[in-house]
View 1: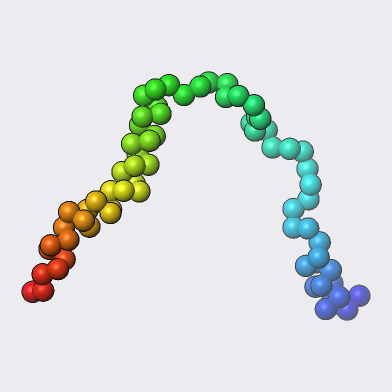
View 2: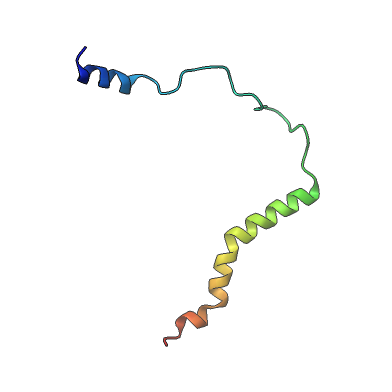
Length: 68
């Protein structure tokens, strides 16, 4: 088989062979529900990550306006 034909066939072949499903993935309700403290920590981390930089810029807006 010519080199170009083998190359084209390798592009059409799936890269990963199908196999058994990965273990540890469970559909359904969680086996260990999160507690209130874990939920609060997670939401606080997301809040600080998303809104922290914007709050910093707004708090220092006057400093950014100055030209020195």
